[in-house]
Length: 507
Figure 1: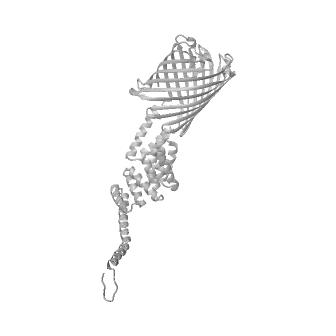
Figure 2: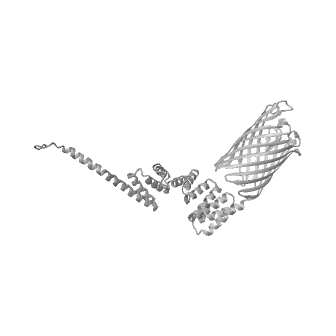
Figure 3: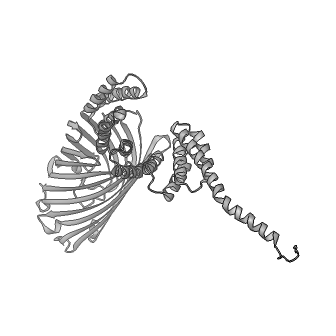
């Protein structure tokens, strides 16, 4: 502190510090502006490198830009695009979604997020995002094109065709690719003639390259496929059974509830022939004949013949197939006509996704029992079945309800059935199939013989092992079946054990 004669005291350090503080405050905007300018320069260099497809160089510049501008949405957007083009999907996802948080309205961001999801093979979600971008910008060709490819991977071929066709019309640059995919869609939808027409056109248009090679491969594949498609199919099967409690029944119908409590050996033969008159999706029509015959060693009076005709028409509108069948059948027991049956069966099959199918079916059946007219009448049934296949595992589960209206009330009944099954592949290409069902059956009137109202429950469990021997459509099966019926009428209680061995060939 200095004091001059006749003057005031002056605090020099205080003034000095104040001056330094003021200068620092004045310099802050300049420092910040310099930092922003450096970040912006690196950003510009990164964008230029990205546009030139120098992705590693772009990543370097944009990473430096982010050290100066860590919350800049455009930096995150472009570095995310760079990682996406480089195949670094996890880093691309991180930065693109950061860009979305900071500024969800960046032009092109929705498309990049859709393309990222597409590259991650999440086709259903990717399609939704591409659709969002198409609604914002209907002229965005790549969004429509990639949406079509998503539908292609989801096996929604008719819908994919519409998207590929529109994309082809919008841009001549991707027209050949679109037509190539359209041809495959037609093949997968069953229209091989239209597919070959497009592929042969592309073959003449293209000079060389990978696309032409793929076109030539598909032409050869389709031509081979058309040669292998035979309208006529044949199956022949023979089977041996040892049954410890014989009932009168065919493979698709039990005719008597009263067991014999007798053992017997049974040899049966089955023959099936189908002819497809027309099979160009979406429409097909086929007819067939089934013949079954059994021979009992001791109980020859139980020998049976079943003769069935099948007429079926189908229409496919992806992902649903509609079938309508008419199935007349006749059954003979010990050479005498036993039952005449006419069945009408509509069915819907829905492909839920690649591995799952759902079937909803119903049928109306008119029955005439030539040896017991008290059972004459009609039957109405409805069934729900789910099918799931994953690699070598196949699972089925179903629920069905049935009403039988007979001419005599105590022969009429209502039935509920639960069924399930699973098939797995074992070593040495042996397929193991385990199946079972539970049936609850309630009769309508008082039984005139026993004087009680009848109610039955039936349980079934089957296990089979199957193996192909010649790799030409043949199959050898060994199996065991167990059936148990419990009734309010004690005489109708029974248990049945069957061991079987069969061999079949398909042509």
